[in-house]
Amino acid sequence: MNAAQNGPAAKVAVSEPPQLLRALGWWQATAIVMGIMIGTGIFIVPAEITRSLGTREAALSVWAVTGLLSLFGALSFGELAAMMPQAGGQYVYLREAYGPLVGYLCGWSFFVAAQTGGISVLAVGFAEYVNQFLPLTPWEQKAVAAASIAALTAINYLGVREGGAVQSILTGLKVGAMGALILLGYVLVRGLPGGPSALAVHTGERFVASFGVAMVGAFWAYEGWNTSTFVAGEVKRPERNLPLALILGTTAVTVLYIALNLVYYHVLPMDQVARSTRVGADAAVSIFGHTGAYLVSLLIIISTLGSLNGSILAAPRVYYAMAKDGLFFRWCARVHPRFHTPHVALIVQGVWAMVIVAAGTYEQLFTYAIFAAFVFYALTALAVVVLRRTRPDAPRPYRVFGYPYVPMVFVLGSACFLVNTLIEEPVEAGFGAIMLGVGVPVYWFWKRRAVPKTISASSLP
Image (cartoon, rainbow, N blue to C red):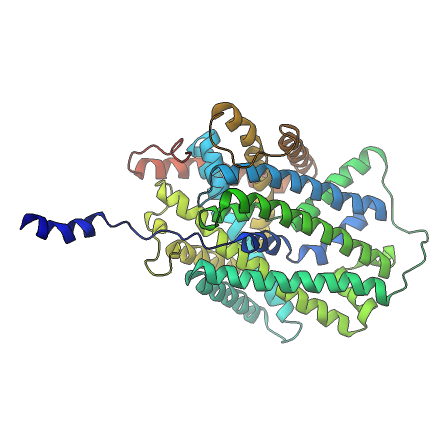
């Protein structure tokens, strides 16, 4: 009698709460990498870089150097992703290598500015390009931006498969369109004769400083390859597919960016590239005529939506992991019983991003967060070395090629970038540092509220 009564009750008592599903394959993971990286930057930033350096060769070298450094970072993150394939990605790696405070500060910067600010920038950019087809007032543009955040949040609320499918479609469309633009730029336009440029060309120390400043814009265009690690807990065969997605996605974007820059210089004079506010649209006008500007605007709308969807899909997994550790609102650790998504974290992120859109502070927040983001990029790559020493026997299905040189080159490159930013843009760097400093007392607030538990060293096999 007791056994009969206790059997069903015992099953109910020990039934596990809903979990995240491993539903993303290698292409969906790669689409997240590429889709988030390719936003609006490649259609705007080349003008600033050309203006800063004055020569085509120097400008292209910026894209090559930043692309190579991004690839070295992706290779380093790949080892950590295969080693610890859990939701939260970079947050988890920092927590395990340096302790919960460093991991928390990374997640804090993501929530306050880096990810939510980036989502807001993308949503506002989407609305601005919609305005090219459907004239909107400033408040209507904000409403469209907020609506895009709400709609994509709703899709990702319904399941990671649904979010991954949308990501695959949008990434495929924009990569195909960029490939067509590159091909037709050479087929339809004979090219311009090389001639002297009226742009100032820097030499010596000034060139080094200008090169470093130009890298800020290029890194912004490459930003986002790390975000795929946030969904590590939902990738099939993560020990294989996560490193593969990081390497393939980052390499493909680097090739696309350099090829697209070559097209800009092929169809436009150097002086026009440097003066342009929308170099991608100007290049398309040279290739297709006046309809080219509308075609590029449509491409940017698709590109922005792909980047926006990928960010909305991935980032809540960080807040979910923080909440599981007791370092964020507990209800953000909930997983929807039907859709198996961190639905509360998705909603919290969406609401905060829409508040940032309404307040109009998205550009400032995102600019300040870039400095903090590179602090954590460098620390995460260095974590490869740290964990090789502190956890030498931990399973590593993928080991970074060229260890320890590849991660250390990325760390040193990031350090040079940070020093140059401190010198050339001290206000932005200062606000980024202040943002991290504010996160320390917030961490101790959550730490005191958390149920005592061991946070670090718990996730490795």
